[in-house]
Amino acid sequence: MQDLTVAFDLDGTLVETAPDLIAATNHVMANAGLGIVPPDVLRPTISFGALAMIAKGFEHHGQRVRVDMSGPHFGEFIAYYTANIAATSHAYPGLETSLDLLSARGVRLAVCTNKQAALSEQLLGDLRLRARFAALAGRDTFPVFKPHPDHLIGTIRMAGGDPKRAIMVGDSKTDIDTAKAAGIPVIAVTFGYTDVHVRELSPDAIIEHYDELIPTIERLIAR
Image 1 (spheres, rainbow, N blue to C red):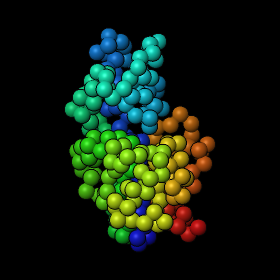
Image 2: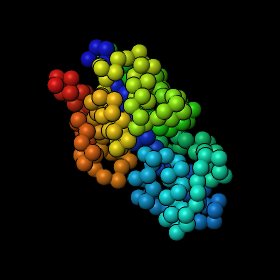
Image 3: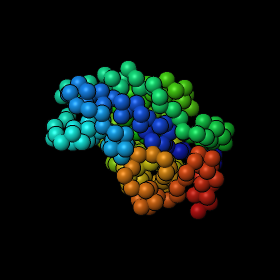
Image 4: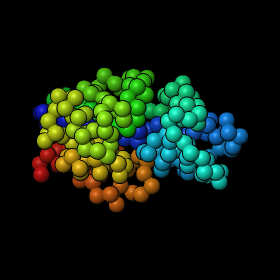
């Protein structure tokens, strides 16, 4: 595995962030005088970002509200989320062991996420995971972001890697589409945030637990 780079998505792939993101969305709903939106309604929208989650929350209450980054709803979300970013968020089981084993084999590790870079740095820092990654590229790191392939390619190069010797790990259609557009093999996890099972999105491989990651990478390399 020497000289291999493995780039991971963040939310729903490295870290279970759903409870804190859902809490931030329901904070916005409460400020608007609306009730709690159930987690199962919001969870499939997480991979599309805060704006989608907020819009889904209002839609659940029968309201169509225009949500953008300059509006008050987004500001309320970010303020609450920043203050509570790691209240309950945690690494998925087996992740840290797998990262340590990959690093011991000379694999470069990187994070390619559509979460804002500062929030990503904060979250991984609070969870004591950041030092494991050679590079982190968020939604605002480059002029483009996932599913544009240059987001992933740029992340790999930031880590000092070669896109021809790389693998992507993600949980959503966005991640899979990005990797395919970049010509990079992609492993999908089953425990993330998507409204369809990842098998329907035709990744190169699927894992249900991080204990399966290294054997799966070895099979992909062998191809």
